[in-house]
Image (cartoon, rainbow, N blue to C red; front, side, top):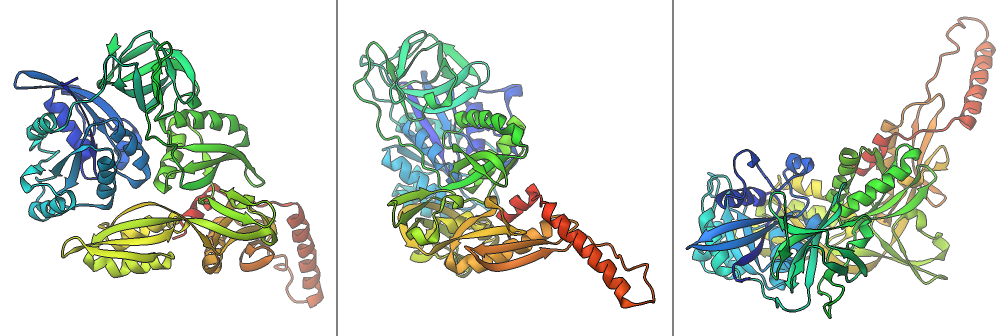
Length: 595
C-alpha cells in the first residue's frame, strides 16, 4: 500500500488536462510508439472533435524513483460545469489532485469550484502552471492568483508544459513525495467504492472501483450494497490502456470488475461492493444520486423506433450515470422520453451520442427546468413538463429553482455582462477584483433563464474570456405562465414552454416569427399563434401557394373574376379542413437557438 498513489487532474475546460496526462503516460512508459496520440485518454470521437473531456478516464502507471517502484493511478476528469458530478466521483476515489491552471488565462470559475470540491474531500493539492511554452503566458501574475487562492508558497507551484514536456519529472516527484498513500485495513472485510461504469456489448457492465478495505480475488461471490444484488467476480484487474486481468486486488488498488451484469439499474455509481460471506458493516458514505438540472423530451422521428430508442437510452445510461429518463407521450410527436440532463452541453452531447453510436434520429423539445407548483386542492406537485401544469384557476403559486452563478471576466466587459445577467432577472450579490484587470461577479439568477442561449451570449460579449460556474440555491416564488404555440388552432404540445410573465410577449413573438420562416408553405394559409390560456398574444401567417385563377380573364365583367375567386376560396377552405401541418425537425431545433 505504501507504494500506491491515487490522484486526479482537475482544471477548467481547455486548460490542458488531457495533454498533460499524455506526457505523464509517456514519461512513465505506459504508452509508447504507435499507441501514442494526442489526448490518448479521450477515446470518444466526440471528445476529440470538440477538444473536451466528457467521461472520467482511469489508467495505471508504473514509476521508479530512487530504485523504489511506485504504482500511480491517474483519473483524468472533465472540466465543463455540466460534468461536475463526474469530477466529484473521481475526487472521492483519490488522495491527491493536480490543480492545472493555464498560464495564459489564469484562474477560471470552474477551477475554483473543482478546488473547493477537492478540499472538502481533504485531498492534497499540487498546483501546476501549464502552457508555460506559450508566448502569451503570464507566470508572475497567475502565480499571484494561485497564492491568493491556495495560500501556498510561490516555489510550490510547478511550471509545466503539456506540449513540450517541461516540468513533468518534477510533477511525478511531487506526486510521490506529497500525496499520501491510501489508508485502509487489508485484514478488514472487503469494501470498495464504484466510481464509474462502462458498457461492453460482449461482457456486460464493467464497474470501476477503488478498494478502501480488505481484498478481492477473481471468482469471489460479491454483493452490491445499495442494489442488494449478488454476483460472482468473473474477472478483476487493473486499468492500463487496455484492461489487465489480475488474480487478486488489495487495499488501495484501483481496478475493474466484470460480473456479466446486463441491466443498468443494477450498478449505481457511488455504491459499495463487499463479500457476501463476510460483508462490511457500513456502506461508504458521501455519494448522492445526481440531480438533473434541465429537462427535455426526446422523441424518435419515426414512431416505430420507440423500442430501439429505449434500448439505446439504457445503454447510454450505463456510460453516463447522470442521464435520467422516463416514458412520456405527446399529441404532436407520439411516444418518447422525458429526460433529465445536467445542463445544455450535456443535452447536446447525449443527442449527438444517440445519433453517432446508436444511429437514432431524434427530436428534442424545448428544454425546461423542474418547477414546484402549489395547488389549491392537491398540495404541491413537481412539474418537469409544461403539459403537466394544472389549469391556472387551480394554481396557488409556483416556485422555480434559483442558482448562484460566478462569472470571472476581464474588467472591461463588466458592464455588458451585468446588463446580460440583469436582463435574465439576475441580482448582483457580490463584485470582487481578483487582480487590477480581472473581476469575479456573483449573481443570483433563475435557472430557467440560463437554459436559453445564456452561455453563448456570455462568450460573445466577453470575446470568449468570461468563465462561468453555478450551483443550486433553492427555490423561490415566481410569476410564471404557460406559453402555447398553436398551428391552425391546434396546440403543438412539444413547443409549449413555461416562462416569466415579463418575457412572455417577447418570447411568443420570436417563436412565431421563427416558425414562420421554417414551416414549409402549404396549399392553404397556416396561422401560427402564441397563446397564454385562451388569449392570443402573437401571430404570424405562412401564406398559401396560390394559383392565379383570374389570369385567363381579360376584359369582361368583374363578376366572372369574382365567381372564379369564390370557387378557389371554397376549395382552399375544404383543403384546410382535411390538411395537416408537418413541423420539420429543424423548426424544433431552431426554436431552441432563437438568437
